[in-house]
Amino acid sequence: MFGEQLVPESELIIRRIPPDGDPKTVKPDAAGVLRPTSGMMATRSGEAGLSCSRKAVTPPSALLAQLKIQGKDPSGWMVCEIPVAAVNALGFNVIVSPTEIDPGHCEVRPTGELTFSKGNCRKLARVARIITVGDDPKVK
Image 1 (cartoon, rainbow, N blue to C red):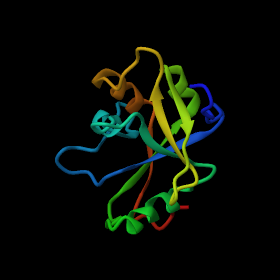
Image 2: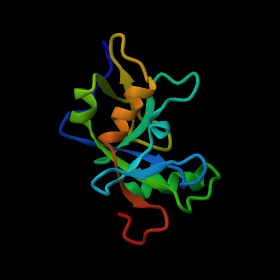
Image 3: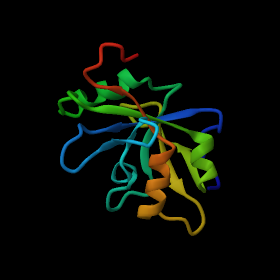
Image 4: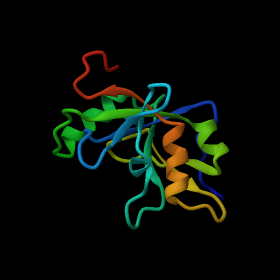
């Protein structure tokens, strides 16, 4: 990770989650907390890391607004929140990687021999929680 800036452990990162349907994108845990499914914490083919944003730089409302810029309807989309310290504890790093439309963009990347296996995606999902839904007027 030489030369790459890490997001501090004290920060929170956020990630967009598509509307729930088939396949399921969210489900409540045993305590009733709504969390993304492990599939929503997996990388796509060819991706080095899991695309997220720094909550301190890009608020949830701005993250959802980016969908319109990308030509997508934000209805029903959700945002999950993940503590960087929890991501690091699982063996991943969070790398600063701003984009043209998202100055707070970052990527969750594995370290060493770690991969985005189904088990590791499940662990990431367990430390994430849904904080907002795109139609929610309380989104900040």
